[in-house]
Length: 354
Image (cartoon, rainbow, N blue to C red; front, top):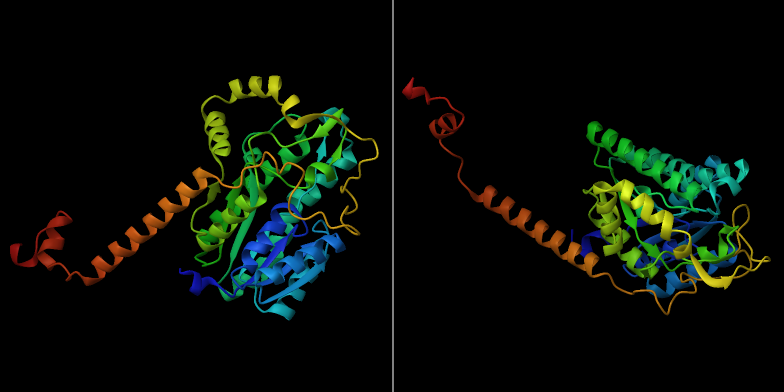
């Protein structure tokens, strides 16, 4: 597809008030898409709408919704279609977490992380498919993480939810392929990203939480989501050299990686600054109801604005697409082979040779 062919779609983004979701909203808006932005925080949503309008969105609406509530998600999907038209792309981003050792996380907290981070994707996708499948059209993009394959200490609830999303996505993708529908589902595995979550997520760590370096800006993640939405034939995309290295190492030597993370995983997720006891968290209530935090966290000075791995992957993908198109044109222009030739290729003989 060309940019002209894919522009002007109706796109829904969950978790759109901050971080990756916020950057995705701006990226889709820059192409003139119509956007339904879903999140809990009113001020964050208002800021996201303003940015999307300035970026060039045809129309933007904000829908305050907790994705852990399936009825509310269904109502949000219906509102999106009523105001913007049939949904073409649905991007699942919304999540929450708790930074703490597993034994310090309560059952209620673990349930809440699972309901938002995993079941939120499930509920949103059900609402999207109820509309996409009858039309035989649509794309689902699920924002994942290297943690979907490689769990890390201090993030057991989040690791479990991301692993669950990965297994669920694989099963869903198989079912969609088996059904023959043209609706597609793909997943984007992200590296550490500079988002406000490290000031929002409930934490029981002695020091302030941080992403495991190297850290990327949310716009890097947004470019990957945009590319996946335009090229949903692949089952998943890996973003950042660190994601590639982690997933390859986990596939080759997972036990060795266990020991490495046991030694480094605690310190690498904390800064040198003591955690403030009055820090807010968004586990049950949005932090950005009255204050807009934007897409970026507090790690701008060290976050990378580009990923050479991502650029190379997209260039190779574009090249492969052009090769496939050229091969298709060559095949279409070739004369049909003679019956005798086809028979001999298949191991038989032509009728006049029998």
